Image (cartoon, rainbow, N blue to C red; front, side, top):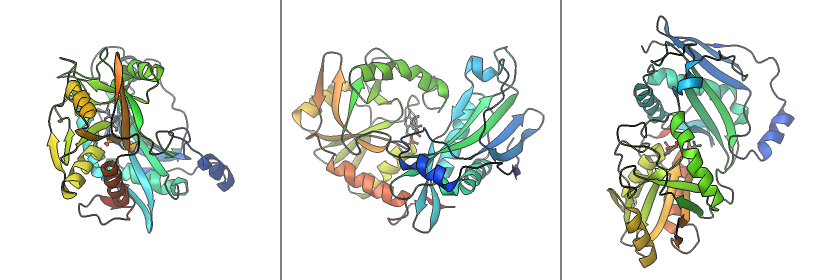
Length: 360
Ligand code: PLP
Ligand code: COI
């Protein structure tokens, strides 16, 4: 059901003062500071989407038998708003709306129309516009939906809650553009064929945490997963896609085979890379090839990409038994060029030939 939804605005009784807000926004980190408002929309079998509200951000009251708490029927999105020169903007929000719909289908949840999704997001950005940082910071938006019916049988819920919250953010990785170190796990996988790897559901992230903890214990910033069948083919990181740049101007990235998340940053970079004269190869790429190409120097750069992290060079790959290095320990040159183009378009500072810049 994809009916239009009215979003009622309910005045916040006590929004933070400009001083309190400025203090929180001075050094926000990632995902720790939240804005004044949230948008919620309910769904039931009988009414479809209804009861849209913009309210003060507040805890949910949730029944202990709510299906999400037991069977993890939950999906989310990650997107950003920016303070462009002449106002606020989003980047390819219809792509987030489409992916949210695909995630919903995979998790047997109701589909929200693109229009309602974008309207909900825009409503929150407008209400909390003062929280959108100036300069390099951005305004991370987290639309999500969970099964709110109180029922312990295992079947799709008959009630759902959709919500959007927002968080002013700085860099995802500490250390700016210093290349990150990744841990290539040969013990854990993120997703298997027929599973939920291509959906943005909370369970995928829960399943990645023990591998991420192992990465941290080995001094790494992120974990990189290989395929579930052979443990051989590079897939993606816990929360980012991955691309490799070779010495002959090729950009290699694992294909969207159903086990990795179709990143909007990934898709945008592939377009920009083609325009920048790189040859894009979406193909399976193995850990062994990665090691050989990095050691021989055929691989010049590698980077992780996603909304939260934008584009982060990978400098070191560690695994059970050794490590290897990519490039010279500095942010990759092509990586930096692609990042500059992407960020320029996101912030309305570069010509947008693609129609990606979405003015609010
Ligand atoms: N892969 C995973 C598992 C992610 O969580 C994300 C982040 O959303 C990405 C890739 C990158 O996707 P996007 O560029 O759309 O943010
Ligand atoms: C994003 O980049 O939006 C993500 O979802 C990654 C992570 C914060 C979960």
